[in-house]
Length: 230
Length: 161
Image (tube, rainbow over all chains, first blue to last red):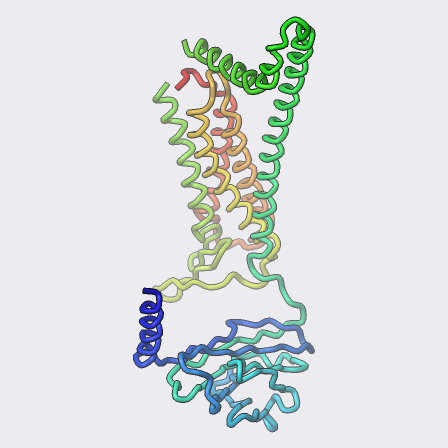
């Protein structure tokens, strides 16, 4: 039964790619960086096919406000080709691992002129149909706190404090009740020991007493509440 | 007794709805072409409204404080409603609805903080424009939650369930 199931799943997985052979490329959505720092732009892809030897990665850059994109990086035939004429010459480094479907690049010594959109396009022959993915780079003098961080932390802190107070309140009530219960048990125990010489059969009831005491206490409470209702 | 209970429940529900309207709707400050608030800014261009980000010169710590406390007010008020219903069935005769009162009081405090910060920090020097309905609803819900919490602190359970 299991073998049939396994065979069926393998056959299905083999059939499906024939219909949906699109390659899916993943980059970030937006990256923030400080002036003068380095940043790693990651790009990876998902494909139903095995990673072929002819896999290619291609990065292009479109500056903020510019109309066209220029190509800054290309990996093909097992070798990376970096930008040696454009705005990123000597500032680009290939840090990806094409065998593991990683085509990330490292941008060094960022400047305000590097604000823009970086697009990664990967192809894994014969799986070549896909949509390129873009990541937006924003260069700051001082990295601002992201919108919502302060909001979320205030809400979380207040709710957490509230939860803590409620837990402590119920813990205190539980501990106080246990202390009162222990005191009453010790009182009951002293009374029982006085009569031990005459009635030894009542030694075992002393052990069972705690549960009986609790039952008696709850019974008393129920009776009181019934009286209140009336 | 049932009528009183229904009235109190309705008051609490109304305050929740007003708080939600004040928090969610982007209308704390309005001009003829702009309706802005704690989340986004609506700008009227010709005939259509478009949603824009809030300007960068907003003091963002205060903005996020207003956002956080108005959300907290909504949360506390909604939790308070459930606590009230729960206390309705678990309280013994003669006891007060302190827990529900505490939640409503916290909600009142939070929305007061939000509205006060907004009044004092934002749009102080802008003369063309007026406070929008979200702002007004925030202050009205402050009054409602305050009244509601006072009622909860004073009310005693008359009949046991």
